[in-house]
Length: 106
Image (cartoon, rainbow, N blue to C red):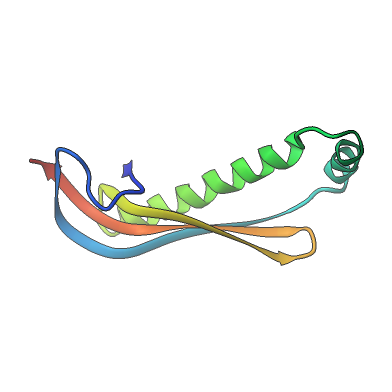
């Protein structure tokens, strides 16, 4: 599956568009990770626990979006975007969305 933030793919021609596809995932923080994050907040530095958590949820959202695109017959997603929101205290949603298309070599 080709995934691009652009609307076109160099060397490829869009043959068919299947419309909007999306995938989302929601994750909540873990108390143990919050303690580590609180310590980092005091001493400074990257909060790697949260970086890893957000990376995992982003990949899950992408996987779900690609699954929907494949189910529609697409072999690529163009105009990929991410959105995120805090759903509740300690819980965040990542949404990946784009346009599912079938591309061929030019």
